[in-house]
Amino acid sequence: MAATNVRGRLRTRKLWWEELPENELLDLQIRDLDLSVEGSWIEASVRQLEKDLERRGMRFRPHLWFSHEWFTPDGIPGVALPFYLGHPRLIQLERSQMNEIEGGSKDECIKILRHECGHAFQHAYQLHRQLQWRKHFGPSSRKYPDSYTPNPASRRFVQHLKLYYAQSHPVEDFAETFAVCLQPQAMWRKRYAGWPALKKLEFVYELISELATKSAPVKTKKRIDPASAIRTTIGEYYSDKRRRYRIGFPDVYDRDLKKLFPQVKGSQPRELASSFLRRNRSEINRLVGEWTEEYRYALEQVMPDMIGRSRELKLRVSGSEKSILVDFAIILVRHTVDFHHNRRSSFAL
Image (cartoon, rainbow, N blue to C red; front, top):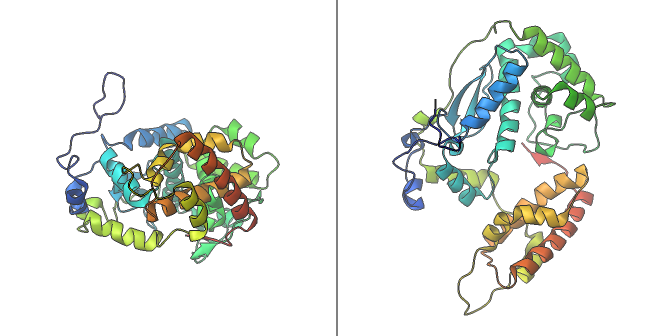
């Protein structure tokens, strides 16, 4: 059990590297981090997942380990967690290197865990071999596309993770449906009433009930690419990751961003615009106000791109912060509407 402080919050164990300067931290190999799920930042989300499974009366528990990213290997009923979620210092580093953190909030983290647990559950019971499973979700052998083009208006799929991820592949459709089924039944029945996706939810709900107390035929505890064996340095990891995922942010925002964050010669160094926007993200969302679901997904694409582009341009805050936030919200709304109506044809996998 991890130690807790007087307020009952999880206290992470002290590690020798956590106060190193960033340049020294980047020189460490990932295996040097000595990470453990127990006592880590992510443990609270793991325990929430266990409660979700217990509430459904399930014996199944996926085994977990830290690796380079989120994934569930084929044929293995376990989940790999990204090493950067193993400690607040690493979460901070991920944000500084990549601008965004996949699973960086407790809400998003538990959502991803429920999704990955669905994959592990599928592997443990070899569900993709069942005729009824294939009838509802399609063949698991279907080739993974490099990208997919979702239909935001479709009601054939649940909406759990961002970017309509259930529409990307049959196994993702199942994992997303499983994740929703871990919520209280009354919630998803109300949420998806009248949707064709409700039939998938009812099928998975019954499947979980049927297998809840049965032993899984696949019991291996094998771990693929555990963090403890990764010799890549953290710096090399981020260099490769930026090359794969962050080749560059769209320059369509440049004119507005440069006008909002003008260069002021001879002035004292101010906060980076990207840091300022991240820090005020909740206020920006408040200013933007309530959005329909379709626009909300567009917003979740545009805002990170604008923040990332601000960072690439090395823009800095100058002037009234309150006025900047209002002006940024106005610009964000316009670009979100443009994105929505001229939406990218596909999302990369």
